[in-house]
Length: 340
Image 1 (cartoon, rainbow, N blue to C red):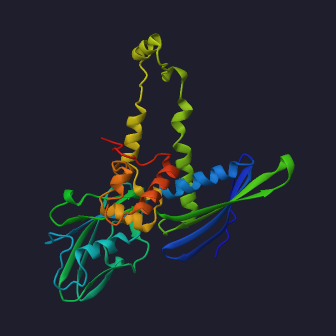
Image 2: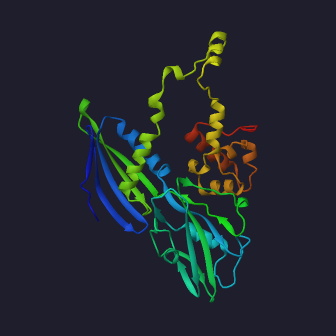
Image 3: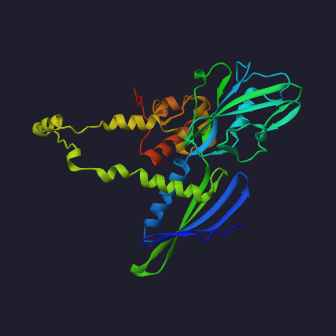
């Protein structure tokens, strides 16, 4: 266990790493204290840092694997213990660490009999495997196995369409999330008008980033995301009033761009996966089996239609409706589709 003494001050607010430890190659832990905040500020920062750490911090992962002479992901190869699908799942569990944003290629070429692990993969110089012991496949006969993989850097989940892949290429539903979990707590000190808050933030990572690297990258994302609002000018904003023809004509002649709120909302939901709803496993798996991957897909079902999904009862419908309202302040359509 290590104790970090580094601290950085921004005005009156300081942060310090008070604990850092490596529980395993694929589980690193860090605990940070940030203080002093005015009342209410610690929760604002804690919520934002938690969301940014889990959703905005980039990670490196295998996104595609190519098996020579294989036509289907559930194919079996004589001399290999697992199916191609099982091998792809094992490749998904490999945790690479890389600094480049370019697509990299890795090659696994092994002759059996042998139990193959991540350490047998030839990785590009800019990439390393965090845990060489990660299991991939068991070769039971004296045959050669060749697997070509693509390694990319991204955020969150990536769900690929297998129809777009041919000639032995199979997509890997990559999870590019180096931060496994984040917790924060708020503690008061002082009294009266002098009351201040201290926030403790705990971060667990998969080893591809250290906790201090993850919290630093999350903070940078939080700074960058609202930057466009700093440059808003009054002349760039169109104001319209219903029933006011002059106002409407003035807006029409303006060079400012008017956005359709419904169109923006629809695009947002098309790129937001149902993972964000944090549904119970049963409801989540039923939606996945019904090919419902995004919020937009989900809103194409009314409450009545949803209850007809296989193994998806009224309780699951209520859970989905509650999650939609809590996370996005929207509800499932009652009798008609939300999107055409």
